[in-house]
Amino acid sequence: MDTELDSAINNALTSIPDCLAAGYVDMSTGMLLNFKTAFEHPHLDFIAAAAADLYRGKTVMEVERIWNNARGIQGKHGYFQDITVQSENHLHIFLRGKKFQDHVGVFVCNISANLGMALSLSRKAMPLIEQAF
Image 1: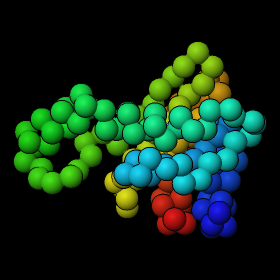
Image 2: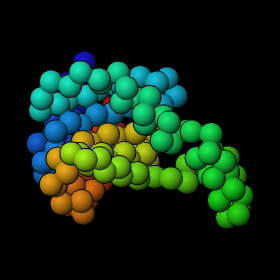
Image 3: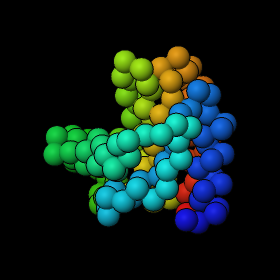
Image 4: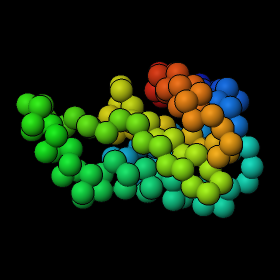
């Protein structure tokens, strides 16, 4: 794996409070480009699929089309940028890339993490991850 991307992902993992996992997904290919965890995770293969479903599900695509049309935006522009999902034990943060709209940063934190801080530091890490790619 690319050492710059490894370094950027590791930096996100260690700089985001209570972060358990950080990764980078290419939705156009369905590939998990890089992923680091603070623990053994048995279902990494589902991360890329989950990100693609969140941003490219049929209903989401229709909502984006309607909103983009209403705002006069033409072409492929992702309306939804940041998505947070809170499960019983984890906070999942998905950030669409600015440089590469088909790429998504994935950050998983303990549910005890401060949402605002985790989101802010995830947003700070994302340009570094994109640059490293």
